[in-house]
Length: 153
Ligand SMILES: [Zn+2]
Image (cartoon, rainbow, N blue to C red; front, side, top):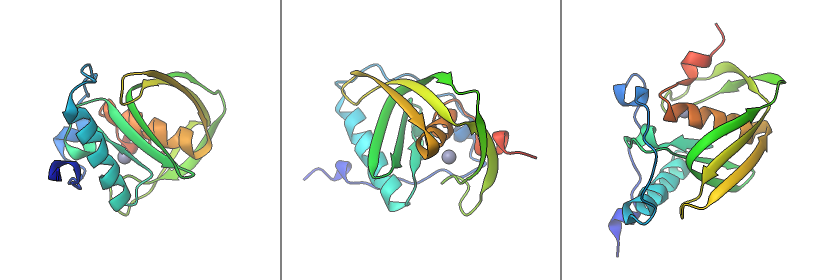
């Protein structure tokens, strides 16, 4: 039995300095530690009932983020936002690193994202609504940007 594959990880809370780091691209898709990390992140997100989770929140500096919207799970490696809609919307965002808090944030309603899957295969996602919002929030984490930086004053 591989216990390493069944771990719920501790979520770093603001103002932990690690949340401000810029994450590094994943290059080795054959490394078993990558799939272990992603499956542990998924377990952690589900246990915490989050709709998204980014690797820096569990103390990893790799460019990995998750989203679960409408019962569809997205596990994105090296995600990049390639296009934003001009139309924006304000919505109250929560974050597992700011438990119990919500912040009004204005973001584009649609984004186009380029990423890789867990095997390194290139994927493209056109997201709108909640998925677009969650992915923008999680990709911000990979650059050390937090919801409080975007929150409307
Ligand atoms: Zn967050």
